[in-house]
Image (cartoon, rainbow, N blue to C red; front, side):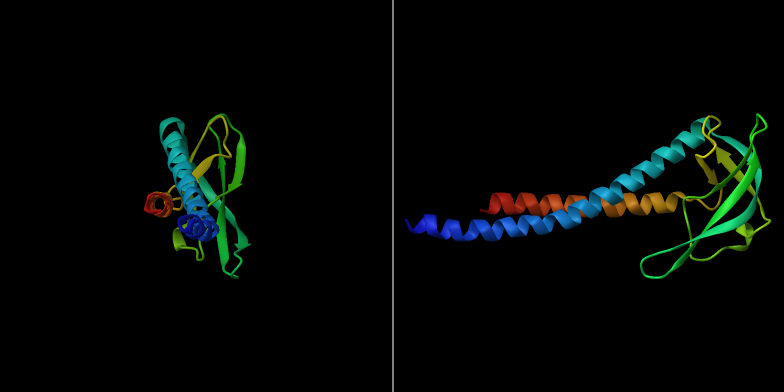
Length: 154
């Protein structure tokens, strides 16, 4: 009888602890997904992408929740089949380096079937994908390890 009471007291407490593990697990899976998506996208562009000379025509601005302004360069180029393209990079930075100012010539690698899928070489970097993949792996592995330790500890 005594064991049942002590177990009954631990179980609701344990349920709340498992809910807290959902936070790092969700963040980890999100970061990991974003990083893996970025690596896959870069691999596809390396494999089937075509390079073209482009020009930065403007910068789109976005604001984070903390108030930081991010600049997304808009590159204009002409595809191999003669289509004019003008798209903003999905990757924004808080400052603009001189090689990416308005009017700067840049090299663009794009998917010939979907020119909206592109990267500005030197701006869109693998370092961000690597960082998100590593952080996502740590958060996910840590949350799963805590879950397994808690599962077998009781």
